[in-house]
Length: 178
Image (cartoon, rainbow, N blue to C red; front, side):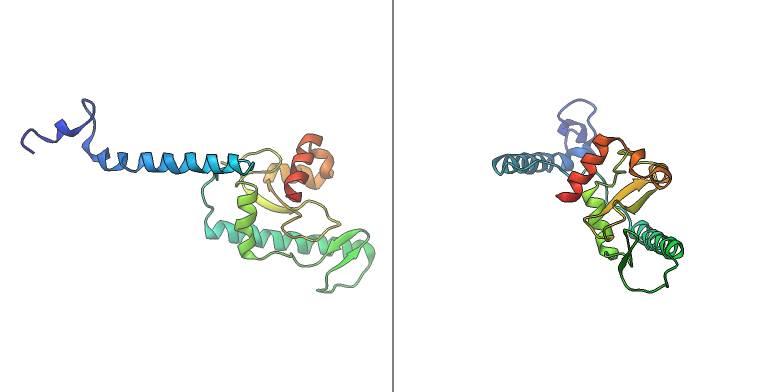
């Protein structure tokens, strides 16, 4: 303290309040490099989580929208086929209908799989994301749900998979298989 706190900085004008942070940065860098090395040894891709965690209320809204969407699909298919409404899962005219085969906790898992991004456009910020069943002939489980932004979802609802390029379709189906 004899000379003042400005003498403790590595360079002139360095703010003294950031000095405690500098000690943890090499540790974080070392952990990151170790992760890269382990993934390389295991011949696995290094894919760190790039998005921040989505809040509970947003995840709940996504889950409620999925349930409403599945109910709407069920009502449309049953109305077209003149079938009676039941709560049982079944296939009508090639479309699987029934309640979603996921629960609230699975929404966070789905967000991690799709990295909090729209599967079609890759948009993350400024986009309302929704869970959507990719193949209507299969149940709405983790192997058949995709996250889409509202604009991509509108095109998907109007034109189906033909609104999405072949390359993006292949990437989505590859991720659903893994």
